[in-house]
Image (cartoon, rainbow, N blue to C red; front, side, top):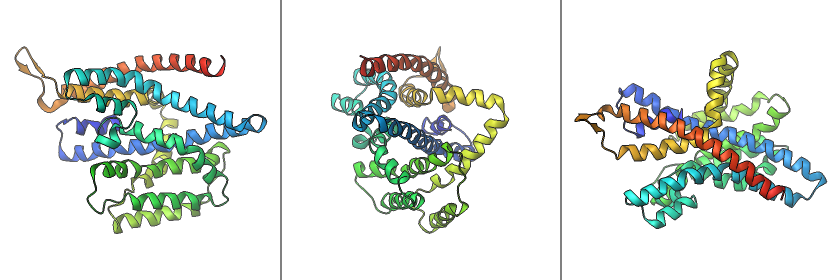
Length: 315
């Protein structure tokens, strides 16, 4: 979905109705955030359970190290070569390059891998959110309260300074992450969810018409994910494809935006023939090369992860 959505940003020419469909692929980010919240709750549950017989602080430090290694290792091994290229052949300054390495580039400049900038912060606050959402008898009230708060503070009602606007655009996607964390315990324990908790979703859907400035696409993430899961359970070949892309999801996201930026600034005139028409060949090259490079770097990052794990925890 995300790769489909990025085709529009890479100027691929298509009929208006197809462009509108492609743009809707950005809900893939919300699904990814939903699954991230789900996965982090699983790992936090495991960590806190194990910490009943060990030091809680050491357990949480270990959790943070593993989580950040998982996301930052592939980020750095793909981003550093890209930044070297940008500073060598483009107008990127050293300050912006350092900002990108620190995952600050999106907040400051509105460019770069914005999803990484956001998820780094969400990882930091995930243990606190986990305690709020899982230690409360009224976790769904807590869940929806946080989501409503985010909806309205991130509502695009007035022009904002660029830095503040970047923050609002990213944090309006956080409700999907909150819902993922909220539902994790039910999924893990195979427990049903009272249908009454979905009444606020219906009300929020009505609010989206009253307050169209609020980002409400996260409302359909849960039913859409259930539908996709059903399709995966029926069609085996879809499971195989999704398993592959799931394995390289982070790396393919990074290679897609980096190669898309590089290829967009290249000449596509070969032997006097302009191959840039419609940007079809250009974006197809981004997809093919991006998936191949993502697979290679996923293998590298996995080996590095295992090595660093040995260094931090078994030395």
